[in-house]
Length: 110
Length: 114
Image 1 (tube, each protein chain N blue to C red):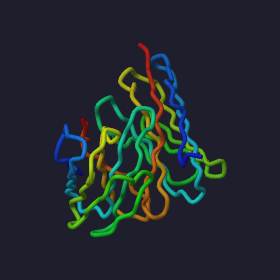
Image 2 (cartoon, rainbow over the protein chains, first blue to last red):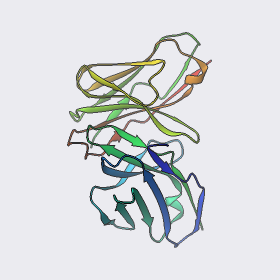
Image 3 (tube, one colour):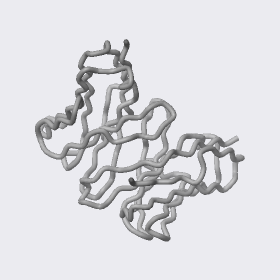
Protein backbone atom coordinates (compact mmCIF):
# COMPACT_ATOMS: atom_id res chain seq x y z
CA UNK A 1 0.00 0.00 0.00
CA UNK A 2 1.34 3.38 -0.97
CA UNK A 3 1.81 5.89 1.82
CA UNK A 4 -0.13 8.58 -0.03
CA UNK A 5 -2.68 7.79 -2.72
CA UNK A 6 -4.43 10.04 -5.18
CA UNK A 7 -6.62 9.42 -8.19
CA UNK A 8 -4.43 10.24 -11.18
CA UNK A 9 -7.30 11.73 -13.18
CA UNK A 10 -7.56 13.65 -15.34
CA UNK A 11 -10.38 15.37 -13.54
CA UNK A 12 -12.25 17.61 -15.96
CA UNK A 13 -14.54 20.38 -14.73
CA UNK A 14 -16.18 23.30 -16.53
CA UNK A 15 -15.08 26.82 -15.78
CA UNK A 16 -16.84 28.18 -12.71
CA UNK A 17 -17.52 24.76 -11.21
CA UNK A 18 -16.13 23.28 -7.99
CA UNK A 19 -13.21 20.90 -8.40
CA UNK A 20 -12.81 18.28 -5.68
CA UNK A 21 -9.49 16.53 -5.24
CA UNK A 22 -8.97 13.69 -2.80
CA UNK A 23 -6.04 12.04 -1.07
CA UNK A 24 -5.71 9.17 1.39
CA UNK A 25 -2.72 8.29 3.53
CA UNK A 26 -1.70 5.15 5.37
CA UNK A 27 0.31 6.34 8.38
CA UNK A 28 -1.87 7.35 11.32
CA UNK A 29 1.13 9.14 12.80
CA UNK A 30 1.03 11.74 10.05
CA UNK A 31 0.83 15.23 11.45
CA UNK A 32 0.76 17.74 8.65
CA UNK A 33 -0.74 17.77 5.20
CA UNK A 34 -0.07 19.89 2.17
CA UNK A 35 -1.44 20.54 -1.27
CA UNK A 36 0.99 21.57 -3.97
CA UNK A 37 0.17 22.72 -7.48
CA UNK A 38 2.52 21.90 -10.33
CA UNK A 39 2.24 23.38 -13.78
CA UNK A 40 3.75 21.47 -16.66
CA UNK A 41 7.52 21.89 -16.70
CA UNK A 42 7.56 23.76 -13.41
CA UNK A 43 8.35 22.90 -9.80
CA UNK A 44 5.63 22.24 -7.23
CA UNK A 45 4.39 25.27 -5.31
CA UNK A 46 2.52 25.15 -2.01
CA UNK A 47 -1.10 26.27 -2.09
CA UNK A 48 -2.53 24.93 1.18
CA UNK A 49 -1.42 23.37 4.43
CA UNK A 50 -3.62 21.85 7.12
CA UNK A 51 -2.75 20.36 10.48
CA UNK A 52 -5.99 19.70 12.38
CA UNK A 53 -9.29 18.09 11.59
CA UNK A 54 -11.84 20.22 9.81
CA UNK A 55 -11.78 22.78 7.04
CA UNK A 56 -9.31 25.50 6.21
CA UNK A 57 -10.21 28.14 3.66
CA UNK A 58 -7.94 30.43 1.69
CA UNK A 59 -9.61 32.38 -1.07
CA UNK A 60 -11.08 29.94 -3.59
CA UNK A 61 -9.31 26.99 -1.96
CA UNK A 62 -10.57 24.88 0.94
CA UNK A 63 -8.59 22.03 2.45
CA UNK A 64 -10.43 19.40 4.47
CA UNK A 65 -8.81 16.94 6.85
CA UNK A 66 -10.31 13.87 8.50
CA UNK A 67 -7.66 12.04 10.51
CA UNK A 68 -10.02 9.28 11.64
CA UNK A 69 -10.69 8.34 8.02
CA UNK A 70 -7.16 9.24 6.94
CA UNK A 71 -8.11 11.45 4.06
CA UNK A 72 -7.48 15.00 3.03
CA UNK A 73 -9.22 16.85 0.24
CA UNK A 74 -8.90 20.09 -1.68
CA UNK A 75 -11.86 22.01 -3.05
CA UNK A 76 -11.37 24.68 -5.67
CA UNK A 77 -14.37 26.96 -6.07
CA UNK A 78 -15.11 28.94 -9.22
CA UNK A 79 -12.51 26.93 -11.14
CA UNK A 80 -10.55 28.84 -13.77
CA UNK A 81 -8.60 27.58 -16.79
CA UNK A 82 -5.48 28.81 -14.98
CA UNK A 83 -6.17 26.20 -12.29
CA UNK A 84 -5.40 23.47 -14.82
CA UNK A 85 -2.36 21.71 -13.37
CA UNK A 86 -1.29 18.64 -11.43
CA UNK A 87 -2.20 18.77 -7.75
CA UNK A 88 0.07 16.90 -5.38
CA UNK A 89 -0.91 15.81 -1.91
CA UNK A 90 1.97 15.60 0.59
CA UNK A 91 2.04 14.18 4.09
CA UNK A 92 4.61 14.82 6.79
CA UNK A 93 5.17 12.64 9.80
CA UNK A 94 6.95 13.67 12.95
CA UNK A 95 10.56 13.39 11.93
CA UNK A 96 10.27 15.58 8.88
CA UNK A 97 9.95 12.96 6.16
CA UNK A 98 7.73 14.48 3.49
CA UNK A 99 5.98 11.98 1.21
CA UNK A 100 4.01 12.85 -1.91
CA UNK A 101 1.21 11.20 -3.79
CA UNK A 102 1.45 10.69 -7.54
CA UNK A 103 -0.76 13.70 -8.21
CA UNK A 104 -4.12 14.39 -9.82
CA UNK A 105 -4.33 16.15 -13.18
CA UNK A 106 -7.02 18.83 -13.20
CA UNK A 107 -8.37 20.27 -16.44
CA UNK A 108 -10.70 23.24 -16.33
CA UNK A 109 -12.53 23.75 -19.59
CA UNK A 110 -13.66 27.21 -20.67
CA UNK B 1 11.50 34.81 -0.44
CA UNK B 2 12.93 31.38 0.09
CA UNK B 3 15.29 30.46 -2.66
CA UNK B 4 16.34 26.93 -3.51
CA UNK B 5 18.77 26.78 -6.39
CA UNK B 6 19.80 23.70 -8.31
CA UNK B 7 23.08 23.90 -10.17
CA UNK B 8 21.82 22.77 -13.57
CA UNK B 9 18.49 22.93 -15.39
CA UNK B 10 19.44 20.25 -17.93
CA UNK B 11 22.18 17.63 -17.89
CA UNK B 12 23.17 14.91 -20.33
CA UNK B 13 25.54 12.25 -19.03
CA UNK B 14 26.88 8.96 -20.28
CA UNK B 15 26.19 5.57 -18.75
CA UNK B 16 28.72 4.79 -16.06
CA UNK B 17 29.64 8.40 -15.31
CA UNK B 18 29.64 9.73 -11.77
CA UNK B 19 27.12 12.56 -11.62
CA UNK B 20 26.80 15.32 -9.06
CA UNK B 21 23.60 17.32 -8.63
CA UNK B 22 23.97 20.33 -6.37
CA UNK B 23 21.34 22.19 -4.39
CA UNK B 24 21.72 25.35 -2.31
CA UNK B 25 19.14 27.06 -0.11
CA UNK B 26 19.42 30.51 1.42
CA UNK B 27 16.94 30.35 4.30
CA UNK B 28 18.92 28.47 6.92
CA UNK B 29 16.54 25.49 6.69
CA UNK B 30 17.43 22.37 8.65
CA UNK B 31 15.77 19.89 6.30
CA UNK B 32 16.71 19.22 2.71
CA UNK B 33 15.30 16.63 0.32
CA UNK B 34 16.04 15.04 -3.03
CA UNK B 35 13.16 13.66 -5.10
CA UNK B 36 12.87 12.27 -8.57
CA UNK B 37 9.74 12.75 -10.59
CA UNK B 38 8.62 10.41 -13.34
CA UNK B 39 5.34 10.42 -15.30
CA UNK B 40 2.60 8.59 -13.43
CA UNK B 41 4.79 8.01 -10.37
CA UNK B 42 4.76 11.44 -8.78
CA UNK B 43 7.59 12.59 -6.54
CA UNK B 44 9.57 9.80 -4.97
CA UNK B 45 11.89 10.54 -2.09
CA UNK B 46 15.50 9.49 -2.65
CA UNK B 47 17.22 10.88 0.43
CA UNK B 48 16.67 13.57 2.97
CA UNK B 49 18.83 15.31 5.53
CA UNK B 50 17.73 16.95 8.77
CA UNK B 51 21.09 18.37 9.78
CA UNK B 52 24.64 18.79 8.57
CA UNK B 53 26.26 15.41 7.93
CA UNK B 54 22.97 13.66 8.78
CA UNK B 55 21.03 11.74 6.16
CA UNK B 56 18.24 9.23 5.91
CA UNK B 57 17.22 7.00 3.06
CA UNK B 58 13.97 7.69 1.35
CA UNK B 59 11.93 5.26 -0.69
CA UNK B 60 14.33 4.75 -3.61
CA UNK B 61 17.95 5.26 -2.44
CA UNK B 62 19.52 2.51 -4.55
CA UNK B 63 22.15 3.85 -6.93
CA UNK B 64 22.33 7.21 -5.16
CA UNK B 65 24.26 8.77 -2.33
CA UNK B 66 24.17 12.22 -0.77
CA UNK B 67 26.44 14.66 0.95
CA UNK B 68 25.67 17.52 3.30
CA UNK B 69 28.85 19.15 4.55
CA UNK B 70 27.29 22.59 5.01
CA UNK B 71 23.80 23.49 6.12
CA UNK B 72 22.91 25.32 2.94
CA UNK B 73 24.12 22.69 0.47
CA UNK B 74 22.82 19.20 -0.27
CA UNK B 75 24.37 17.16 -3.05
CA UNK B 76 22.96 14.12 -4.80
CA UNK B 77 25.50 11.72 -6.29
CA UNK B 78 24.84 9.07 -8.91
CA UNK B 79 27.77 6.75 -8.40
CA UNK B 80 27.51 5.14 -11.85
CA UNK B 81 24.77 6.64 -13.95
CA UNK B 82 22.39 4.30 -15.69
CA UNK B 83 19.67 4.94 -18.26
CA UNK B 84 16.94 4.16 -15.72
CA UNK B 85 18.10 7.19 -13.76
CA UNK B 86 16.96 9.48 -16.55
CA UNK B 87 14.43 11.67 -14.76
CA UNK B 88 13.54 15.06 -13.35
CA UNK B 89 15.32 15.63 -10.04
CA UNK B 90 13.89 18.07 -7.55
CA UNK B 91 15.56 19.45 -4.46
CA UNK B 92 13.55 20.93 -1.61
CA UNK B 93 14.18 22.45 1.80
CA UNK B 94 12.06 23.13 4.86
CA UNK B 95 12.55 24.50 8.35
CA UNK B 96 12.35 22.01 11.18
CA UNK B 97 9.17 22.62 13.13
CA UNK B 98 8.42 19.06 14.21
CA UNK B 99 7.34 18.15 10.72
CA UNK B 100 4.77 20.89 10.46
CA UNK B 101 6.51 23.08 7.93
CA UNK B 102 6.05 23.08 4.19
CA UNK B 103 8.86 22.41 1.73
CA UNK B 104 10.13 24.81 -0.92
CA UNK B 105 11.40 23.48 -4.22
CA UNK B 106 14.20 24.29 -6.59
CA UNK B 107 13.60 24.61 -10.32
CA UNK B 108 14.51 21.00 -11.04
CA UNK B 109 17.26 19.30 -13.02
CA UNK B 110 16.27 17.21 -16.00
CA UNK B 111 18.91 14.52 -16.27
CA UNK B 112 19.28 12.37 -19.36
CA UNK B 113 21.61 9.39 -19.22
CA UNK B 114 22.61 8.07 -22.64
